[in-house]
Length: 267
Image 1 (cartoon, rainbow, N blue to C red):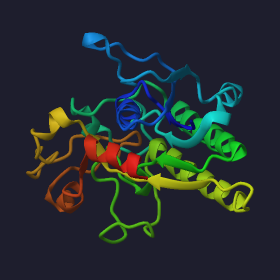
Image 2 (cartoon, rainbow, N blue to C red):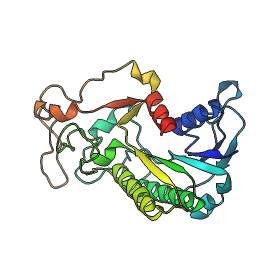
Image 3 (cartoon, helix red, strand yellow):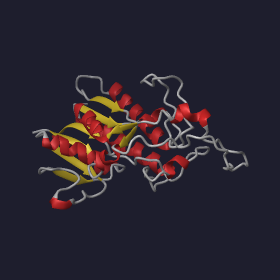
Image 4 (cartoon, rainbow, N blue to C red):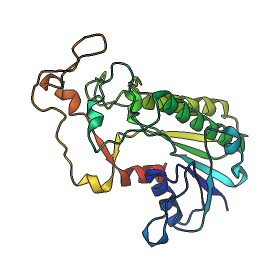
C-alpha cells in the first residue's frame, strides 16, 4: 500500500493536508523537524488515524535519504520557514509586518533562504531518485514580488499570471523561485520513462486562517495621506503610504486555508 509523504506535518497547513489525506483513506507518511503537537482530546495537529511520523530535519540530506522512499508514491512538500523574517532585505519597509495578524519568523534572512532551498532540493532529489509519481511543491505568490512592505511591489501587468516575471523582494519569495526552478530542473532531467516523476508548484497569496476570515476586510495600511517621518540609513526620506500607492495596497489578497488544503489534495 503506497503512501503520500507530507512534509511540515507539525505545522498548520501541513497538518491539515495530512489529516485530509488520512480522512480520505490514504496512507500518509508525515515528517517535520518538530514533534506533532498534542491537542485537546488526545488528537494531534497531524494524522487522525494511525500513520508513520518521522522527525527529520529536511536540511540534512542523510536524514531525508533515511525516509522509507520505497513506500512513497507521492510527495506534498509543505515544510518551509514561512516568512517574513524579522530581518528584511535592504530598502524594504517592515511597517506592514508590525500588524499583529502577521507572524514574523525569528530566523535571519540567510537562514530562511538556505533552509527553504536546501529542504526543497533534498526532498525533490530523493523523490526523483526513488521514482515517485508526483511531487507537489507549496510555493507562493511572493515569488512574483509580493512583500510585507505594501508599496515595494508594482506588477508589470494585471492580472498576474504564470508568465509574469518573478521578481521577489524578500528571501522567502526568492526561496520559492529557487524551489520552482529546482523542480523544473529535475523535471527536465527526469523526462525518461524510467524516471517518471511529475512536478507541480502551487502559488498562493497570504493564507488566512479560518478563524480570521470573518474579520475581513481589514483596513488598508494607510487609507489617508500622511507625511512620512521615517528616515533611511543614508538620511533619505522613505516612502509614505499615501493615496498614490493605494492601487498597490488594494492588491493585497488572502486565500482561505481550506481552499489551500483542497488545492494540495487535488494537485
